Image 1 (cartoon, rainbow, N blue to C red):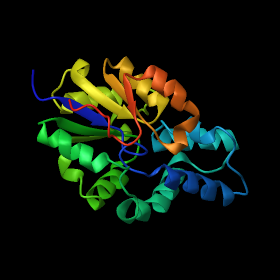
Image 2 (image 1 turned 90 degrees about the vertical axis):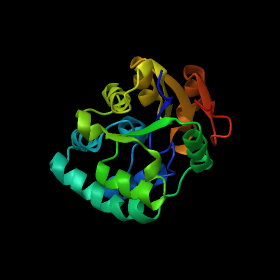
Image 3 (image 1 turned 90 degrees about the horizontal axis):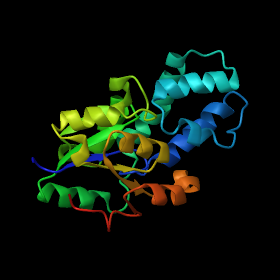
Length: 214
């Protein structure tokens, strides 16, 4: 067996970024005279941006194209990701511990690469990761296990030897469908599903203090 393999979601798992997306959603819809309906954020939280755009257009009968929505969302998020989004509590220290243990690490994120890399770089953690995988690469969001399978392939790891850290329950279910172990990470944006996540996952953590060292 090679080095242990650990796959991290980014938003809401190692980065404290979900509040930014909630604000973007609210501001985006407010520009169109709309408010954020209950459940909307849960519906789009596991999707890649293009799928979220198509869903939003259908839900609100918007005249925009998916590409137009993605560009608008990216423009709204770009500065925040490059300069203002911090790490989740304990995440940086946990990455150090894994590195010292020889773990191979990957990011598997629904966010586009143009947001992902600047955020990791701004926090000084880009170098921890042997691979960065985005939903754009597989053409599907995390309702599918494809992104997790891609991350394992890039790490040259058997999916059964991978541990995935996720804050989103539906994404965690997809990681499990790929044959991986799953640890839930608490985030305020996903609090409605936290009790279910704790029952579903192999383990859970609030601040990485009790997370396993692979």
